[in-house]
Every structure is written in structure tokens, then in C-alpha cells.
Length: 99
Image (tube, rainbow, N blue to C red; front, side, top):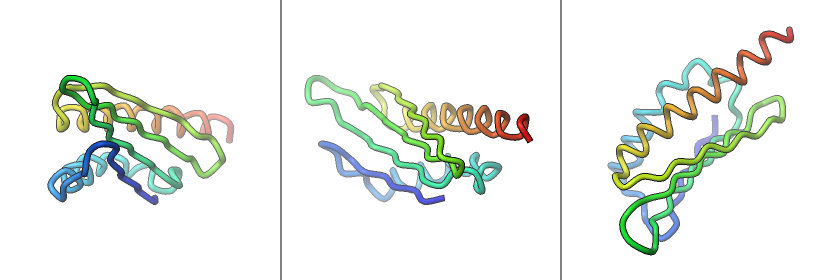
């Protein structure tokens, strides 16, 4: 799985990347199914908060988007990784049902 993490109006620190890598360990079951995972962390220009976007590219061509808005970055990372895991399990279930 190719992981890309980028920040928009925000520079992800090494600690943030390590935390994200630790949380993405949940996706070990889908290692062969997810080709690319692109995560964009946007710091909101007005007020406080972050917008997280994750784009999952599956090996069979399907692309899914997952988004989450939060005030605390680490809380948002935890919740978006849960959403990514749910989408990956659902897509994996669809493919194994058709075989």
C-alpha cells in the first residue's frame, strides 16, 4: 500500500505521521486490496479545526473518499482511520461475495 500524507495550510510533524502510521496498522487485513491511500490534512483558515480527506484506491479500480471535520487533530486521525477501516471492510466484503 502506498501511503501519501500531505498538509494544506499545515505541515504534518513527525509525531503526527507516527501516530497516523500506528493507527493505520488496523488496515493490515486489506494490505493486498488497497493500492494507494492519500490523506490530506487541511487546517481551517477561519477559527480552529481541521478537515481530513482520505482517498482509497483499491486494486480492482474502485476509488472511495472519506472525510472528517474535527477540532482536535489526533481525535480526527483516530476517527478517520476508523472510517477508512469500515470502507475497506465493506469493499473487501463486496469483492469476496462476488467470487
